[in-house]
Image (cartoon, rainbow, N blue to C red; front, side, top):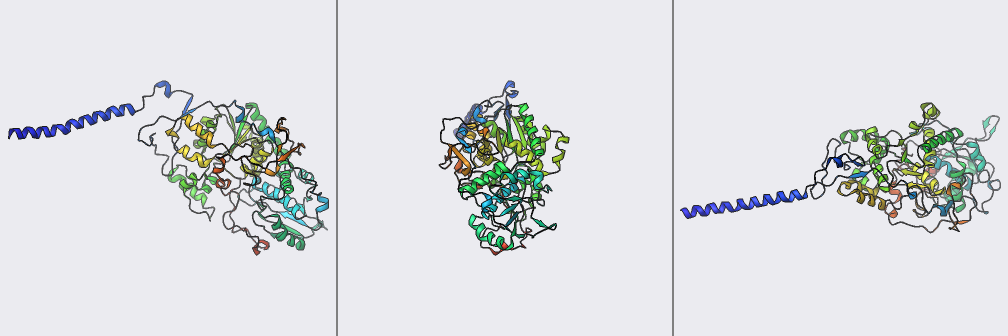
Length: 580
């Protein structure tokens, strides 16, 4: 029996010894894999900032997840440097810009309005949306009047939509300049002719489809105009096709970039804001942040605020009755969600803008307030807005009018050294096209579709790796010449017919010398052969459209629909989308 008991004891000792060896090996392995303890100097290094990994839709702001990589091992802290490459010229201008200029002079085959305008044809326009959406309508209205050989009555601004601004055309734009500058192209009057103090004829109201072509206007609107003599086109936004005859496209540019000028009061206040920014820094960024509650609700995106965020934004989202239930993760993967202020800051730092850069923010109420803005302000402490640059007394004439306040932001963004847009709405499109026309000024649009996964996994890589990827993904989204193929996107964003390439590229050309009163008469050719960056083609312009350009719900698109000429057609079944 004794030998049997000894064999039993040996049988138990062997597994115990193996277990001890395995445990010891695991401890040694973990000691090698664990990150070294941070020294006090590394923790307090003022050159570094640390930010948590962005949360997915399943996270909650009250839950903090550790910095763990896919292998389950603690990764290194994501270090964001304070400095950038702010002194590099290519951050503020395109090196290729000198080879291009805006050109809106029509050809000799475009006769004077005195020869083409027919008597007893009056076109009236009722615009729709916010300031910039209405600007597109005003621009297209002039071209529509030219197609119809009609006299245009100064467009009527939208005073009933979401924006609730009672301003008329002359309180936003210089109406006299608008009329006189275009006198050779289209006859424009301030109001319908009167006889014995009464309007000679009331307008016949109708609506044209979106993207209505020249033929569409001739076949659908002209017969009504010939019969009724006065026609008013309602909800006039994006009612003209992108592709028109070259001279008509150039007329579009002439209207948008030369004839439409803000009133003296708005322009002078905008100039003061720009002057005060220039006093602070030689260069500055204008950022259209667009992170207001209504935008986030409309987008259907989620930013980690838990039940509180879902309830608040869900309540706002009910304003658009026909919006489908959203899939926040899918929307974000497809690049349809605005970046958070923190993500915008990280993108700019990765592109090379240091903390010394001054930023002018054009934005309304930010969702989450100062807490949401804190990471961006930490990255860029030189943070300004019209409210911080001007006194309440100076802003008083504008403060009660959303379009006039938006006009001030427009002036500053237009003349900034770099313009950064956080969505693809009307202000972003209008300014992108305008900045291309006046010298391809640096205009940055986040490649949100590619940046999504990068932001989500940034704690699994070094800062240098992260910055390199951001710079790669942003190629084709920086406002360089020929980034967008001619004819692609909205014409107001990509006015290819009005962008000319200099014949002699060796001659230096200062894009700032292009006068807003007209062209310089440079000799060159229109841009036709595009440079298409491989990264730019990955995200279609339509992919980044948050629905701001079109009403939510059923839209009329069929030119043969008899409702197009129904004078009783109402807007009650159409929900106004966000427009600026």
